[in-house]
Length: 127
Image (cartoon, rainbow, N blue to C red):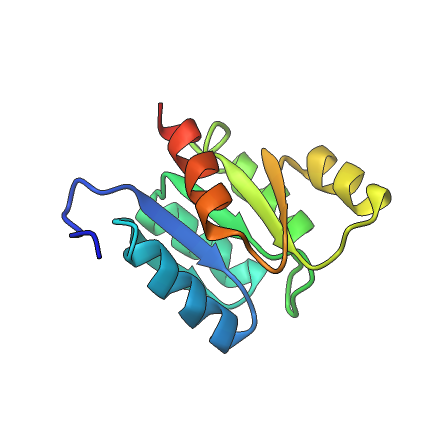
């Protein structure tokens, strides 16, 4: 397990399923990231604005405000246009991928999550 310090990158995990959020937190913290969480898109906007994460992992299908709309709104926040936002979803269809790209997602990952691949992707954005 990696040590987490105040210099570690912050990853915002946006996921409506509590168990999935917990599993993602454990995996990411084990790789040395600081993790903050939001349970829906509306909360994600507030957390992103407050925490200024280095990367956002955003579920697409959520209650209150979906990930597509939340990402578009996060992109409108001052200083948040360049933050990598990775769609994390169980959906594989091309239309959803196109919608994700149009909403401002940087990359797309499908569930179940390959955390080794995801870690490499996140590290690539940090360089």
